[in-house]
Amino acid sequence: MKKYLVLSTLVAIISSPFYASATTFLDFNGSGANDTTWPGWTYLWDTSSNPVNYGHPFFYKTNGTQYYLQKYPELAFKGDYGNNSNASLDPGFRAPSTSTGGSFKVYDLGTGISANLGNGQSYDVPLGLPIDQPSWWLWQDLNNIKINLGITASYDRFSNYIYLNGPAPFDGTNPNSSETFEWGTFNCWAGGGAYGESCPTEASNAHYYHEANIQYGAWVHILWDKHPTHQRNVQGSVPPNNPTSSSGQDYFETLFKWYNQFAHGFTTMGYSFWMDELLFTSATDLGEPNQNDISIASLWTGYWPSDSHWEIGWNDLKTLDNHDSEYEIRWSTAPITNANYANATPLTPLANVSVGNKIHKANTYTVFLWTKFKLPAGTETNNNKLYFAVKDVSVAGGMYLASSSANIHTVDYSIRPLSGTADTTTPAAPTGLRVR
Image (cartoon, rainbow, N blue to C red; front, side, top):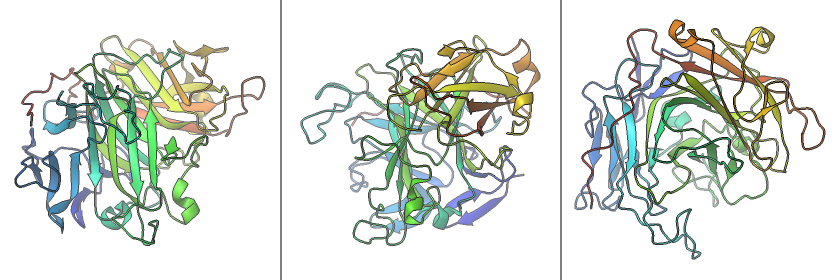
């Protein structure tokens, strides 16, 4: 049975069926959750009663903290590039790790127009053309998650199941392939603002981007870590792991708002994404506390039941300089550690392959790595959960930089829940769209 603890304005689940010490953040499992009905939350989209959010849709915690005309925390529309999105609870579609509840769906309304960024340029889509870029503030609060939710520095993984859907699938073998999905974060702490402000004012330039090259059409499990891909307005270098530590603050502890979105806009309509089973956990809880978060960051994997293939991807954040790296991937039916890594089974990659069934970049200028693979027949049928480990085995020479760590980086994947049946059916197109 799940236990509940009231922490500030959020009812946070403090036990998790996935990891022993994890804290479930949002799982969208409330009884009766459907469309805009979400127990404990209120959905609002009405211009006359919603002047603060400019008539855009959002959910807010019904018993939340009043701040000016709104209550917090909230999950809200984000449309700063001209896109026009909505969100709802989808009770008929859920991550494969669970047999209960639904998921959170974000979809574009097809009414957005590419916006001017203030310098005469648009974002991805030429100025004035239709733009489809599902985007949503998945969290906005008045203080950081250490103060309001009890998330401490011991947590170094944010586990998300994500499903991307769209008419133009990503191809990770393309040398020009880049990120498809983004987690954009903001931090705050007492006195951290540019002029000494405290929460809810952002600490000085504390806006970071975690990017991933996730493929479409299946549930993917990503373990975001404390190593973002880049920082706002900082060019030519990679942020350090746990970037706020230079200010004496832990990166996860001081998060107070973030958004998720397709990383690029499209002129073709029909894109959407689903999120489910969001929880904070740690590498220790995954079985190996000593992991390589430098050249293996934002690790994800997913399974496509239609043809029984898998995909996996991550970011090499050693440096932004032109270079290549080489990796090995192993899998097991039990958690993989640095000590037992040699006993895990090497997989055979089907894309971006280098000598000896190792993986390397499709483009030496990118930070993204990706491949696909298949496992022996019967593996998925006979196991509910599988474990994967990536190891940087790069040797300096030519375009290759030496490995940044001898440690592995791990991710797991639930093919189905421990009991019950997961719904892995491709979701239907969004219905009930509203146009202002």
